[in-house]
Image (cartoon, rainbow, N blue to C red):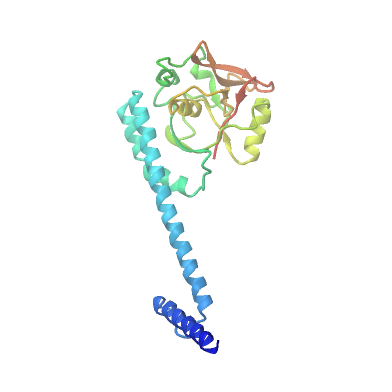
Length: 254
């Protein structure tokens, strides 16, 4: 029995010696458990770096897919070139946000300054049917700065990306005013008309709900542009700010 115990002891010493030899960089007198903690910590850092690198590659692919989709829809080449010039900046931004998998990380937006709302609506294509509206684009205002029409100087630089776009969950039973307050209370921004068009341009199927462009107003503060499906066609109309619009959601971005 004593021999067996001694043999086990020898075996443990042998295993310990091998472990120490594997981690040759460890100081001779450093506690093995502390050293192991350091090794695991370093491994964790390396894994995080690998995960970050993988996210960068994924976002780069998504970026390229978004721009390519616009190209297939007939977006002018000079706009595509401007979007491509933002790639490094946009990828860096989305990587820093820790965006949930359930949200869209990035969508390119074209302002009315570069391509009219009417032209962008015609680019929407669901089974060969384009979008349309009877609204006057000059009367569509950006709610971020009252009185600024989409034909005037743009708040943004005209070509930009929205990031971390949610699905508008839990806004379907709210008025536009309530949805607006809820979104801004989370330090997020409701989508404008142009941003909602940008979202629709990237889809292959019509959304299940109407889309409220709570980031915009039409003609006056109590009217909000809304994208609805009518006779299989995507139409841009309006609804009232303080009334619940049925089967509608207000999506937002970071």
